Length: 445
Image (cartoon, rainbow, N blue to C red):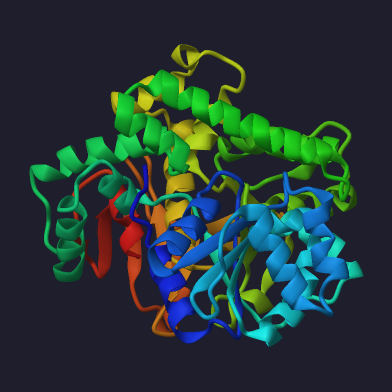
């Protein structure tokens, strides 16, 4: 089953404007749909294509990218014979799948692109390729895009609903309340939270509507991540697993900051690179704390303070009850029946984080610490930029909430602020220059 994905438009742009001078590097987590997208482009936009999977390619194929670069005619003839596919100059695509498993093929791209006979797509994760690439010459001729899990709009498309999200965007643009249909859309959003945006899980849900089968898929994906962690040789796998397994408990805290010392026996300096590995593997999303939103966010980050979200909210729900039957997973019941407890607000915040990341926002939040007590006295969940202005975003998971931090932030940085957003369960409204949006509208920001 093929789904409509927004990232595909960027792939078409690459083919039209940058190929064959640049290879397309599609990066993202395992099972997020990279290979499916590459194959779709090959089928729909080229006369022929060859997919070379480096997780199963024999040495005779791998060696071509090392030993046959001086005579590309031999290389291309060997590929055509092995894959039983004819290549046509200027009309064929070569897909280098899971390229992090054989970085020398990435180095070979410089020579292949100079030849200009065919177009090239690489797929893979930066987690393993970063350190392995120290031994190779990384081609500068790469057009990189990052595939995220499916957002709420893509999920609705997959479920056969191409109307609701258009209505949502119209209400967002005109700031129109939804009225009664808010509850109906929220019900669909709760389904999305449980399923998540990993394509395999979405396929299962579309076909069966069985959350048990969906959870089985997600548990398998988590097991795949654990296996990848175990067999990578860049970082200590125990440290990486410790971080991954502690994400639900750290997000369930009131402030949601990830505190490395909560892991028994952990030292910050030992966990810096493992956290980076998870981030580069696109398994997690890291939000950094900034102390001064009046300057470029990355210039005022507070290195010791960060939040660690799962890249996919559906996987977070399954991770919270790892290796248990989904019927024992209280989050399914809580979300379906709209009875989330206050410490389960992590699910909503994770979903908002995921939506912001999918929209291309870098992830930052504001934090102010009392100099004397060293305690946090003010915090805003997310900061995004719109038209070179700062937009603070607060996520409220309960009906009775306060906006003290948001209002203080507005007072302190009013001249730099464009719009203040509050994401809540209620309807869209505008009060006191604050725009309140239902959770599901995060994909509009």
